[in-house]
Length: 62
Image (cartoon, rainbow, N blue to C red; front, side, top):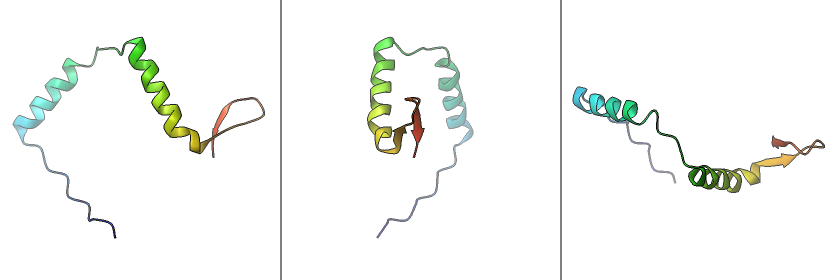
């Protein structure tokens, strides 16, 4: 039997300001080519059971 989903906690004003500052601080950071390759491999490994190739050798979601 599944466990009940807990409620998402509400952020206080201080927590929200901290989150927003971190969000804007990191907005211009770009992933390195190595990080992008690792992300692509992870995506392909997780999505492969749900993807098929059509006649044009393009990926499609099943």
